Each structure stands twice: as structure tokens, then as C-alpha cells.
Length: 368
View 1 (cartoon, rainbow, N blue to C red):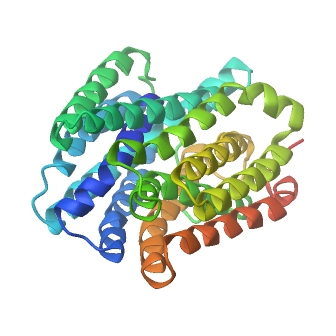
View 2 (view 1 turned 30 degrees about the horizontal axis):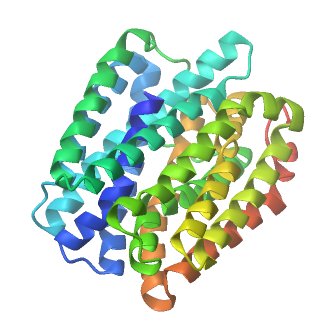
């Protein structure tokens, strides 16, 4: 299921310029429409986590996985901006539900195994990004219609959901609190960090292809390579992540990862040619690779809130980055240009690095 949500994000990235062109959307209009992904996710996450805690992960994940596959095709069928906004809301709600609930299951499995597994789980999300971005870029590079690409990816996501079904937790995932709860101070800090990291990752999903197409003048088949490079380095980093986190420690992993991610985004935004921008997105992926998995591990260690409520709170705050990110970057791009807007995101990543040591004081059970 991590693979499914990664596949959907990776496949959507190279299709964004086609939706923008087909509906004649400006940068700020595209940013406003993309808000619907974050809105849908934020609305669905608390409800999905509360239901999964009560009834088990399996029914929520299967239903939301089906909805992802269906809504992905609708993104390429929407005839108007309003219809695209509605499809993006459904896409975001189903995507956010899977993302939240599968992290609940991952925390349970990691804790019961007694081993560090979170980076490995999130590596499958990144692998999905590679497959999705690469497959769609190849299809549009061969001049296949975007709708054909969307149908192929939607079918693949439905198939993966049914393959995953037997391994999903059928029993309740643990003690559950209210669907909506104010986060504890330590959980709030984790959520704030997730906000910035999700914003940075969202900038790669929604704006990397636009940057390469419109600013670096890359061909349609080349524009998706930025997100593919981002996903590739993130996947490698996460496949090695459980070992690296064990050596560096949780707090150092957050700080160093944020610094590397900021450097990559600066390179992507300021590069003179599209291949150098692709290299910047590769560095961004390497930096982001293990920060979010570490933050979810810390959620499982804190005791100030029920686990389901904490996962929901952090997921909502994280997806608020995807809510604010597309619109904020779009409006800023209209005013000062897309490269400058991306540099502001890099500055936020540096703020995460500077504040990482606060995790030791604010998260129950501590971090090495």
C-alpha cells in the first residue's frame, strides 16, 4: 500500500502540465485547484484513523485504495477547472486515508517486530514514485494520450490494492482517541516538521515538471525526469535508511537530511539547464529520504497522546504542507517567479535543521 500511494504521486507529477495546458490554467489558478488535494486529505485523515483504530486497517485501506485508482483516471477526464477540483478532492481524500492508516499499521508492525523498519516501508512509497513517474514519462514520450497513461496507472493501483489485501491488519490497530484532538506540544513539533517536509516533497510532485517545461524548456518526455530522480535517490536512501538511522541517531538524521534537502532545492531552482535541475531534485530526494520515516517512528515512541490520534494529528499537519504548498508556490510564482518561490521552501528546510535538537526535549521516551 505504500507502493500504491507512491505510484499515484509519481504518476501525477508528469501529468500536471497536461492538465494545466488542457484547461488553460495560469500558475496561480493551478495552485488554487491543487489546493483540493490537501483539503481532501485533511478532511479524510482524522476520520480514517479513528475508523481504522476501531475496525482495523484492512477495510479502510482496501476501500481507499480502490478510490485512488478510480479518481486518478478522473483527473484526466475532468472537462472544467471545477470538475478537476472535485476529482482532486476525491483523489486527495483517498490518498490521505491510505497514507494515514498505512503509517498506523507500520508503527504497529515495527514495534511488534522489535526492529527498525520504517525507512524500509517508506522506501516502497519512493519506489512507487519512480515507477509512476518513469512509466508516465515513457508513455507520453511515445506520444500516447495522457488518458491512456492514466488508465494504465489506475489499473495497476487497483491490482496492487487487491494483492496487498491479505496482509493488512484485520483487527483494530490499537487504542483510539477522538477523531479530532489538539496535539500535545511534542506531537505539534513533529507535525510542524512534517509540514515543511511534505511541502518540499509536494513541490517536487506538483511543480518539478512545470519548472522543467516552462523555465528550463525541457521536452514533455524529459519533464518527468525531475520527479523520477527525486524518487530514485529517496528510494536508495530509504532502503539504506534503517541502517543509517541506527548509526546517526534520530535527531541527527532529521538535521542532516533537512540541510541536504535544502541544498538540493537551491540547486534545482537556480540551475541554468534542465539536467542540472534534475540533479538538484536528486539531492532533494536524498535529503528528504529518512526524515519523515524518523518522525513517524517518534510518533510511536511518544506517550502523551493515543497513537491513532497522534498519527492523525501529524498526518493532518503534514498534509497541510501539501494544502498550503501548491497554492503558496503558485501565487508566489506569479509574483516573483517559480525559482524564487522554491528558494523560500529551501529556507524552511534550513529552519527544520536548526530546530531538530528540540525533539530531544519535547518527545516522550527521547531520541538518541
